[in-house]
Length: 206
Image (cartoon, rainbow, N blue to C red; front, top):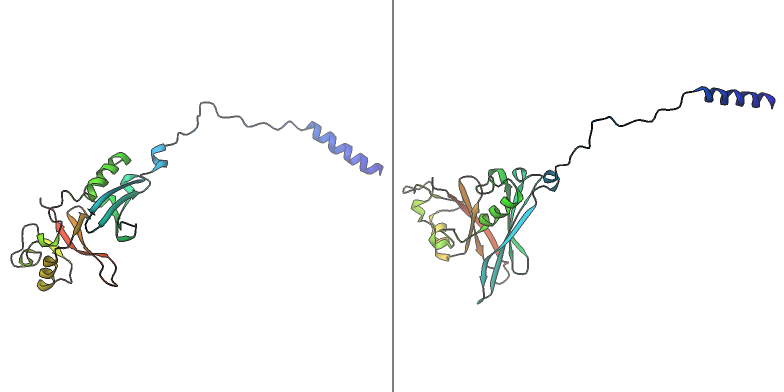
């Protein structure tokens, strides 16, 4: 027992001889790194605009566009067209850096304005299929116009003429730097749901 007390006393004596532990001090002249609030907030913007708002018969469709990304230059644009009860009938997405009208919007405020223009159908020349060019003037045809419409590959003259005769509502929006994508609305009948389908691209002039 005496031996144990002797060892314990020796250890306490050694501990008393050790220098006290130093407390880390902050380096003079340094300050906290500032946080870039614009970078942390990102580019999260959305807009909504009525496309078709008809009372008789009741037909209401809304275009909703949004951009999500760490910055507006690194954003993804999403387009959704919904029926009046909210059911989506058309979706599309693309990188903002490649989209006409959006690629030059570098902050959320500018992007919000650009998105509104992106889905605005008021400036669209062809808003119904009867106003599409004749088949002979589309891309790849003998009388191809200077800025032709490029129909989807499944079209032939008969299908194109039938589409024009239907006079379907058409939604067009920039899908790149040199063209707009157009989709038509096909209202459901009997057991068929309302839907939209892509019909091709319209090249920009200039």
